[in-house]
Length: 383
Ligand SMILES: NC(=O)c1ccc[n+]([C@@H]2O[C@H](COP(=O)([O-])OP(=O)(O)OC[C@H]3O[C@@H](n4cnc5c(N)ncnc54)[C@H](OP(=O)(O)O)[C@@H]3O)[C@@H](O)[C@H]2O)c1
Image (cartoon, rainbow, N blue to C red; front, side):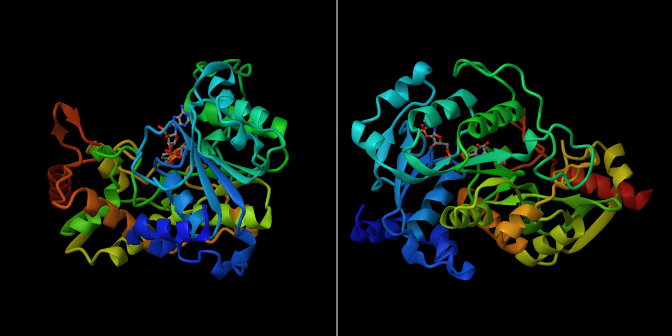
Protein backbone atom coordinates (compact mmCIF):
# COMPACT_ATOMS: atom_id res chain seq x y z
CA UNK A 1 0.00 0.00 0.00
CA UNK A 2 1.54 3.34 -0.97
CA UNK A 3 1.38 6.54 1.04
CA UNK A 4 -1.67 7.97 -0.68
CA UNK A 5 -3.57 4.72 -0.26
CA UNK A 6 -2.75 4.71 3.41
CA UNK A 7 -4.06 8.23 3.87
CA UNK A 8 -7.17 7.33 1.92
CA UNK A 9 -7.63 4.29 4.05
CA UNK A 10 -7.20 6.11 7.32
CA UNK A 11 -9.89 8.56 6.29
CA UNK A 12 -12.31 5.66 6.00
CA UNK A 13 -11.58 4.06 9.35
CA UNK A 14 -13.82 6.33 11.37
CA UNK A 15 -13.15 9.28 13.59
CA UNK A 16 -14.20 7.67 16.86
CA UNK A 17 -11.48 5.07 16.81
CA UNK A 18 -8.83 7.15 15.14
CA UNK A 19 -8.83 10.16 17.38
CA UNK A 20 -7.28 8.10 20.15
CA UNK A 21 -4.58 6.77 17.84
CA UNK A 22 -3.20 9.99 16.48
CA UNK A 23 0.57 9.77 16.79
CA UNK A 24 0.46 7.34 19.69
CA UNK A 25 4.24 7.15 19.69
CA UNK A 26 4.89 10.86 19.80
CA UNK A 27 4.44 10.91 23.53
CA UNK A 28 6.92 8.07 23.81
CA UNK A 29 9.58 9.97 21.89
CA UNK A 30 9.81 7.72 18.84
CA UNK A 31 10.60 8.96 15.36
CA UNK A 32 7.67 7.87 13.23
CA UNK A 33 9.86 7.67 10.15
CA UNK A 34 11.39 4.49 11.55
CA UNK A 35 8.15 2.72 10.80
CA UNK A 36 7.82 3.70 7.12
CA UNK A 37 7.97 0.76 4.71
CA UNK A 38 8.02 -1.72 7.57
CA UNK A 39 5.72 -4.64 6.91
CA UNK A 40 3.32 -5.97 9.49
CA UNK A 41 1.36 -9.17 9.13
CA UNK A 42 -1.62 -9.38 11.45
CA UNK A 43 -2.95 -12.89 11.98
CA UNK A 44 -6.64 -12.23 12.57
CA UNK A 45 -7.27 -8.50 12.79
CA UNK A 46 -11.01 -8.20 12.32
CA UNK A 47 -12.46 -9.35 15.63
CA UNK A 48 -12.36 -7.71 19.03
CA UNK A 49 -8.73 -6.72 19.61
CA UNK A 50 -7.40 -6.99 16.05
CA UNK A 51 -8.99 -3.82 14.60
CA UNK A 52 -7.38 -1.65 17.27
CA UNK A 53 -3.98 -3.16 16.43
CA UNK A 54 -4.53 -2.63 12.70
CA UNK A 55 -5.57 1.01 13.18
CA UNK A 56 -2.64 1.81 15.46
CA UNK A 57 -0.02 0.31 13.15
CA UNK A 58 -1.49 2.01 10.09
CA UNK A 59 -1.60 5.35 11.84
CA UNK A 60 2.04 4.92 12.81
CA UNK A 61 3.06 4.43 9.20
CA UNK A 62 3.43 0.66 8.89
CA UNK A 63 2.29 -1.31 5.87
CA UNK A 64 -0.31 -3.69 7.18
CA UNK A 65 -1.45 -7.01 5.68
CA UNK A 66 -4.13 -9.19 7.26
CA UNK A 67 -4.29 -12.97 7.35
CA UNK A 68 -7.63 -14.61 8.09
CA UNK A 69 -10.44 -16.54 6.40
CA UNK A 70 -12.33 -13.42 5.32
CA UNK A 71 -15.37 -14.41 7.39
CA UNK A 72 -15.37 -12.16 10.46
CA UNK A 73 -16.31 -8.49 9.85
CA UNK A 74 -15.36 -8.57 6.15
CA UNK A 75 -16.44 -4.91 5.87
CA UNK A 76 -13.43 -3.81 7.96
CA UNK A 77 -10.17 -2.72 6.28
CA UNK A 78 -11.45 -3.54 2.80
CA UNK A 79 -8.61 -1.57 1.25
CA UNK A 80 -5.87 -3.53 2.96
CA UNK A 81 -4.10 -6.49 1.39
CA UNK A 82 -5.43 -9.72 2.84
CA UNK A 83 -4.10 -13.26 2.76
CA UNK A 84 -7.04 -15.61 2.88
CA UNK A 85 -5.98 -18.57 4.97
CA UNK A 86 -7.72 -21.05 7.26
CA UNK A 87 -5.34 -21.82 10.10
CA UNK A 88 -7.58 -24.59 11.36
CA UNK A 89 -6.78 -26.95 8.49
CA UNK A 90 -4.69 -29.95 9.55
CA UNK A 91 -1.14 -30.56 8.25
CA UNK A 92 -0.59 -26.84 7.58
CA UNK A 93 -2.86 -27.15 4.54
CA UNK A 94 -4.13 -23.57 4.86
CA UNK A 95 -0.64 -22.15 5.28
CA UNK A 96 0.67 -24.14 2.33
CA UNK A 97 -1.97 -22.58 0.07
CA UNK A 98 -0.68 -19.05 0.75
CA UNK A 99 0.54 -17.44 -2.51
CA UNK A 100 4.32 -17.63 -2.92
CA UNK A 101 4.76 -13.84 -3.01
CA UNK A 102 3.57 -13.64 0.59
CA UNK A 103 5.82 -16.50 1.63
CA UNK A 104 8.79 -14.70 0.06
CA UNK A 105 7.95 -11.46 1.85
CA UNK A 106 10.00 -10.53 4.89
CA UNK A 107 7.62 -9.39 7.63
CA UNK A 108 9.22 -6.98 10.08
CA UNK A 109 6.44 -7.65 12.54
CA UNK A 110 3.91 -10.46 12.93
CA UNK A 111 1.09 -10.11 15.45
CA UNK A 112 -0.85 -13.22 16.35
CA UNK A 113 -4.19 -12.73 18.06
CA UNK A 114 -4.96 -16.43 17.85
CA UNK A 115 -6.59 -18.14 20.79
CA UNK A 116 -8.04 -21.35 19.46
CA UNK A 117 -5.40 -23.91 18.59
CA UNK A 118 -1.83 -23.96 19.96
CA UNK A 119 -0.86 -26.30 17.13
CA UNK A 120 -1.75 -23.59 14.62
CA UNK A 121 0.63 -21.20 16.40
CA UNK A 122 3.42 -23.79 16.10
CA UNK A 123 2.51 -24.43 12.44
CA UNK A 124 2.73 -20.76 11.54
CA UNK A 125 6.14 -20.39 13.19
CA UNK A 126 7.46 -23.50 11.41
CA UNK A 127 6.09 -22.45 8.03
CA UNK A 128 7.31 -18.83 8.24
CA UNK A 129 10.64 -19.61 9.92
CA UNK A 130 13.23 -16.91 9.16
CA UNK A 131 10.62 -14.82 7.31
CA UNK A 132 9.83 -12.40 10.12
CA UNK A 133 11.73 -10.09 12.43
CA UNK A 134 9.54 -9.89 15.53
CA UNK A 135 6.63 -12.08 16.53
CA UNK A 136 4.02 -10.80 19.00
CA UNK A 137 1.53 -13.05 20.72
CA UNK A 138 -1.53 -11.97 22.73
CA UNK A 139 -1.70 -14.25 25.72
CA UNK A 140 -3.45 -14.13 29.07
CA UNK A 141 -2.67 -14.19 32.80
CA UNK A 142 -4.53 -17.51 32.80
CA UNK A 143 -1.21 -19.15 31.85
CA UNK A 144 -0.05 -18.98 35.49
CA UNK A 145 -0.46 -22.19 37.43
CA UNK A 146 -1.29 -20.85 40.88
CA UNK A 147 -3.05 -17.60 41.65
CA UNK A 148 -2.72 -18.10 45.38
CA UNK A 149 -0.53 -15.09 46.11
CA UNK A 150 -0.53 -11.42 45.25
CA UNK A 151 1.75 -9.76 42.70
CA UNK A 152 2.57 -12.71 40.47
CA UNK A 153 5.49 -11.88 38.18
CA UNK A 154 6.38 -13.29 34.77
CA UNK A 155 8.79 -15.90 36.13
CA UNK A 156 6.14 -17.68 38.23
CA UNK A 157 5.43 -21.29 37.14
CA UNK A 158 3.00 -21.74 34.28
CA UNK A 159 0.25 -24.35 34.03
CA UNK A 160 1.58 -27.90 33.86
CA UNK A 161 0.87 -29.23 30.39
CA UNK A 162 -0.23 -32.57 29.00
CA UNK A 163 1.54 -33.94 25.92
CA UNK A 164 1.92 -31.41 23.09
CA UNK A 165 -0.99 -31.54 20.66
CA UNK A 166 -0.24 -33.25 17.37
CA UNK A 167 -3.31 -31.92 15.59
CA UNK A 168 -5.28 -28.71 15.36
CA UNK A 169 -8.44 -30.43 16.49
CA UNK A 170 -7.07 -31.55 19.89
CA UNK A 171 -9.04 -29.40 22.25
CA UNK A 172 -8.03 -27.94 25.61
CA UNK A 173 -9.49 -25.38 27.95
CA UNK A 174 -8.57 -21.74 27.30
CA UNK A 175 -5.75 -21.48 29.88
CA UNK A 176 -4.08 -24.63 28.59
CA UNK A 177 -4.37 -23.49 24.95
CA UNK A 178 -2.66 -20.23 25.83
CA UNK A 179 0.07 -21.98 27.83
CA UNK A 180 0.70 -24.44 25.01
CA UNK A 181 0.87 -21.63 22.47
CA UNK A 182 3.40 -19.77 24.61
CA UNK A 183 5.46 -22.95 24.95
CA UNK A 184 5.39 -23.49 21.18
CA UNK A 185 6.74 -19.95 20.73
CA UNK A 186 9.53 -20.27 23.32
CA UNK A 187 10.61 -23.60 21.86
CA UNK A 188 10.99 -22.15 18.38
CA UNK A 189 12.14 -18.53 18.50
CA UNK A 190 13.78 -15.88 20.66
CA UNK A 191 12.51 -12.80 18.83
CA UNK A 192 9.06 -12.75 20.41
CA UNK A 193 7.02 -10.64 22.78
CA UNK A 194 4.18 -12.22 24.72
CA UNK A 195 1.48 -10.03 26.27
CA UNK A 196 -0.35 -11.62 29.21
CA UNK A 197 -3.53 -9.59 29.36
CA UNK A 198 -6.09 -9.55 32.15
CA UNK A 199 -9.70 -9.25 30.95
CA UNK A 200 -9.42 -6.78 28.08
CA UNK A 201 -11.78 -3.81 27.76
CA UNK A 202 -12.50 -1.68 24.73
CA UNK A 203 -15.25 0.30 23.03
CA UNK A 204 -15.71 -2.82 20.89
CA UNK A 205 -17.06 -5.99 22.45
CA UNK A 206 -16.20 -9.59 21.71
CA UNK A 207 -19.51 -11.02 20.51
CA UNK A 208 -21.43 -8.27 18.77
CA UNK A 209 -25.17 -8.39 19.41
CA UNK A 210 -24.62 -10.23 22.67
CA UNK A 211 -25.78 -8.20 25.70
CA UNK A 212 -23.61 -10.41 27.95
CA UNK A 213 -20.55 -8.78 26.39
CA UNK A 214 -21.60 -5.28 27.45
CA UNK A 215 -19.76 -3.64 30.36
CA UNK A 216 -21.91 -3.73 33.51
CA UNK A 217 -20.40 -1.01 35.72
CA UNK A 218 -19.92 1.66 33.02
CA UNK A 219 -23.50 1.12 31.84
CA UNK A 220 -24.80 1.14 35.42
CA UNK A 221 -23.13 4.49 36.18
CA UNK A 222 -24.18 5.89 32.81
CA UNK A 223 -27.78 5.14 33.85
CA UNK A 224 -27.29 6.98 37.15
CA UNK A 225 -29.88 7.03 39.94
CA UNK A 226 -29.36 5.13 43.18
CA UNK A 227 -26.54 2.63 42.96
CA UNK A 228 -25.67 -0.32 45.22
CA UNK A 229 -21.98 -1.13 45.62
CA UNK A 230 -20.31 -3.96 47.51
CA UNK A 231 -18.19 -2.79 50.42
CA UNK A 232 -15.20 -4.89 51.30
CA UNK A 233 -11.80 -4.07 52.84
CA UNK A 234 -8.94 -3.98 50.33
CA UNK A 235 -11.19 -4.58 47.36
CA UNK A 236 -9.12 -4.19 44.20
CA UNK A 237 -9.83 -4.72 40.52
CA UNK A 238 -7.50 -5.04 37.55
CA UNK A 239 -8.08 -4.99 33.83
CA UNK A 240 -6.26 -4.47 30.53
CA UNK A 241 -7.04 -1.37 28.51
CA UNK A 242 -6.79 -2.33 24.86
CA UNK A 243 -5.54 1.06 23.66
CA UNK A 244 -2.74 1.04 26.24
CA UNK A 245 -1.89 -2.55 25.29
CA UNK A 246 -1.85 -1.70 21.59
CA UNK A 247 0.43 1.28 22.12
CA UNK A 248 2.73 -0.99 24.12
CA UNK A 249 2.79 -3.52 21.23
CA UNK A 250 3.74 -0.67 18.89
CA UNK A 251 6.45 0.50 21.21
CA UNK A 252 7.86 -3.02 21.64
CA UNK A 253 7.90 -3.37 17.84
CA UNK A 254 9.89 -0.21 17.37
CA UNK A 255 12.27 -0.74 20.27
CA UNK A 256 12.53 -4.50 19.57
CA UNK A 257 11.61 -5.29 23.13
CA UNK A 258 11.36 -9.05 23.59
CA UNK A 259 10.10 -11.24 26.43
CA UNK A 260 6.90 -11.95 28.32
CA UNK A 261 4.92 -9.24 30.05
CA UNK A 262 1.86 -9.01 32.29
CA UNK A 263 -0.11 -6.17 30.73
CA UNK A 264 -2.88 -4.44 32.69
CA UNK A 265 -3.48 -1.50 34.95
CA UNK A 266 -1.83 -1.80 38.35
CA UNK A 267 -4.20 -3.41 40.85
CA UNK A 268 -6.69 -0.59 41.41
CA UNK A 269 -8.78 0.03 44.54
CA UNK A 270 -12.40 -0.57 43.60
CA UNK A 271 -13.25 2.85 45.06
CA UNK A 272 -10.82 4.47 42.60
CA UNK A 273 -12.52 2.59 39.78
CA UNK A 274 -15.84 3.98 41.06
CA UNK A 275 -14.33 7.49 41.04
CA UNK A 276 -13.39 7.00 37.39
CA UNK A 277 -16.91 5.73 36.63
CA UNK A 278 -18.37 8.87 38.20
CA UNK A 279 -15.90 11.04 36.33
CA UNK A 280 -16.85 9.41 33.03
CA UNK A 281 -20.58 9.75 33.66
CA UNK A 282 -22.05 12.02 36.32
CA UNK A 283 -22.48 11.97 40.07
CA UNK A 284 -25.22 9.43 40.80
CA UNK A 285 -28.19 10.43 42.91
CA UNK A 286 -26.95 8.24 45.74
CA UNK A 287 -24.50 5.41 46.29
CA UNK A 288 -25.07 2.76 48.95
CA UNK A 289 -21.91 0.96 49.99
CA UNK A 290 -23.40 -2.29 51.20
CA UNK A 291 -21.51 -4.84 53.24
CA UNK A 292 -20.08 -7.52 50.92
CA UNK A 293 -21.55 -10.34 53.04
CA UNK A 294 -24.99 -8.75 52.71
CA UNK A 295 -24.56 -8.69 48.93
CA UNK A 296 -23.65 -12.38 48.97
CA UNK A 297 -26.54 -13.30 51.28
CA UNK A 298 -28.82 -11.73 48.67
CA UNK A 299 -27.41 -13.78 45.80
CA UNK A 300 -25.21 -10.97 44.49
CA UNK A 301 -22.23 -13.27 44.26
CA UNK A 302 -18.75 -11.84 43.59
CA UNK A 303 -17.45 -12.32 40.04
CA UNK A 304 -20.27 -14.61 38.86
CA UNK A 305 -22.93 -11.93 39.31
CA UNK A 306 -21.03 -8.82 40.44
CA UNK A 307 -18.14 -7.99 38.12
CA UNK A 308 -14.72 -6.78 39.31
CA UNK A 309 -15.17 -8.33 42.73
CA UNK A 310 -13.53 -11.59 43.64
CA UNK A 311 -12.38 -12.71 47.07
CA UNK A 312 -10.39 -15.77 45.99
CA UNK A 313 -7.84 -16.78 44.92
CA UNK A 314 -5.66 -14.22 46.62
CA UNK A 315 -3.73 -13.30 43.47
CA UNK A 316 -6.78 -12.47 41.35
CA UNK A 317 -6.78 -8.76 40.32
CA UNK A 318 -3.29 -8.48 41.79
CA UNK A 319 -0.89 -9.36 38.97
CA UNK A 320 2.40 -7.50 38.94
CA UNK A 321 2.73 -5.34 35.82
CA UNK A 322 5.91 -3.52 36.81
CA UNK A 323 8.04 -5.27 34.18
CA UNK A 324 5.80 -3.93 31.41
CA UNK A 325 5.72 -0.47 32.99
CA UNK A 326 9.53 -0.48 33.08
CA UNK A 327 9.55 -1.51 29.42
CA UNK A 328 7.30 1.42 28.50
CA UNK A 329 3.68 0.40 29.08
CA UNK A 330 1.73 3.61 29.70
CA UNK A 331 -1.79 2.97 30.93
CA UNK A 332 -4.25 5.64 29.92
CA UNK A 333 -6.34 7.23 32.65
CA UNK A 334 -9.02 4.69 33.48
CA UNK A 335 -11.71 7.29 32.86
CA UNK A 336 -10.72 7.33 29.16
CA UNK A 337 -11.18 3.59 28.85
CA UNK A 338 -14.57 3.79 30.60
CA UNK A 339 -15.66 6.69 28.37
CA UNK A 340 -14.77 4.61 25.31
CA UNK A 341 -16.75 1.68 26.70
CA UNK A 342 -19.82 3.85 27.30
CA UNK A 343 -19.59 5.36 23.83
CA UNK A 344 -19.29 1.88 22.34
CA UNK A 345 -22.33 0.74 24.30
CA UNK A 346 -24.35 3.81 23.25
CA UNK A 347 -23.49 3.21 19.59
CA UNK A 348 -24.69 -0.41 19.83
CA UNK A 349 -27.73 0.28 22.02
CA UNK A 350 -28.83 3.88 21.32
CA UNK A 351 -32.00 3.23 23.35
CA UNK A 352 -30.00 1.98 26.34
CA UNK A 353 -32.22 -1.09 26.48
CA UNK A 354 -29.90 -3.87 27.68
CA UNK A 355 -31.66 -5.53 30.62
CA UNK A 356 -28.95 -6.99 32.82
CA UNK A 357 -30.00 -9.96 34.93
CA UNK A 358 -33.39 -10.36 33.24
CA UNK A 359 -34.62 -13.37 31.33
CA UNK A 360 -34.81 -12.57 27.63
CA UNK A 361 -35.91 -15.27 25.16
CA UNK A 362 -35.54 -17.90 27.87
CA UNK A 363 -31.95 -16.93 28.67
CA UNK A 364 -30.79 -14.87 31.61
CA UNK A 365 -28.66 -11.86 30.64
CA UNK A 366 -25.47 -11.61 32.74
CA UNK A 367 -25.10 -9.64 36.01
CA UNK A 368 -28.21 -8.41 37.92
CA UNK A 369 -31.33 -6.43 37.24
CA UNK A 370 -32.34 -2.93 38.35
CA UNK A 371 -35.22 -4.55 40.27
CA UNK A 372 -32.84 -6.80 42.19
CA UNK A 373 -30.59 -3.85 43.01
CA UNK A 374 -33.56 -1.84 44.36
CA UNK A 375 -34.67 -4.78 46.50
CA UNK A 376 -31.22 -5.25 48.02
CA UNK A 377 -30.90 -1.53 48.79
CA UNK A 378 -34.33 -1.55 50.47
CA UNK A 379 -33.45 -4.61 52.56
CA UNK A 380 -30.14 -2.99 53.54
CA UNK A 381 -31.90 0.17 54.68
CA UNK A 382 -34.54 -1.84 56.61
CA UNK A 383 -32.06 -4.16 58.31
N1 LIG B 1 -11.81 -9.84 27.50
C1 LIG B 1 -10.74 -10.47 27.13
O1 LIG B 1 -9.81 -10.56 27.85
C2 LIG B 1 -10.70 -11.05 25.77
C3 LIG B 1 -11.83 -11.01 24.96
C4 LIG B 1 -11.73 -11.47 23.68
C5 LIG B 1 -10.51 -11.98 23.23
N2 LIG B 1 -9.45 -12.05 24.07
C6 LIG B 1 -8.17 -12.56 23.61
O2 LIG B 1 -7.74 -11.65 22.67
C7 LIG B 1 -7.11 -12.33 21.63
C8 LIG B 1 -7.55 -11.72 20.36
O3 LIG B 1 -8.86 -12.14 20.00
P1 LIG B 1 -9.71 -11.24 19.01
O4 LIG B 1 -11.04 -11.82 18.72
O5 LIG B 1 -9.70 -9.89 19.59
O6 LIG B 1 -8.80 -11.33 17.71
P2 LIG B 1 -9.04 -10.59 16.36
O7 LIG B 1 -7.79 -10.65 15.60
O8 LIG B 1 -9.65 -9.27 16.57
O9 LIG B 1 -10.17 -11.51 15.67
C9 LIG B 1 -10.07 -12.86 15.45
C10 LIG B 1 -9.55 -13.06 14.02
O10 LIG B 1 -9.17 -14.42 13.80
C11 LIG B 1 -9.60 -14.78 12.52
N3 LIG B 1 -9.78 -16.23 12.45
C12 LIG B 1 -10.73 -16.96 13.09
N4 LIG B 1 -10.62 -18.25 12.75
C13 LIG B 1 -9.58 -18.33 11.87
C14 LIG B 1 -8.98 -19.40 11.15
N5 LIG B 1 -9.44 -20.65 11.25
N6 LIG B 1 -7.93 -19.13 10.35
C15 LIG B 1 -7.46 -17.86 10.22
N7 LIG B 1 -7.99 -16.82 10.88
C16 LIG B 1 -9.04 -17.05 11.69
C17 LIG B 1 -10.89 -14.02 12.33
O11 LIG B 1 -11.17 -13.82 10.96
P3 LIG B 1 -12.00 -14.92 10.10
O12 LIG B 1 -13.13 -15.40 10.94
O13 LIG B 1 -12.43 -14.12 8.92
O14 LIG B 1 -11.03 -16.00 9.76
C18 LIG B 1 -10.59 -12.69 12.99
O15 LIG B 1 -10.05 -11.77 12.08
C19 LIG B 1 -7.44 -13.77 21.76
O16 LIG B 1 -6.23 -14.46 21.88
C20 LIG B 1 -8.28 -13.89 22.99
O17 LIG B 1 -7.78 -14.88 23.84
C21 LIG B 1 -9.53 -11.58 25.31
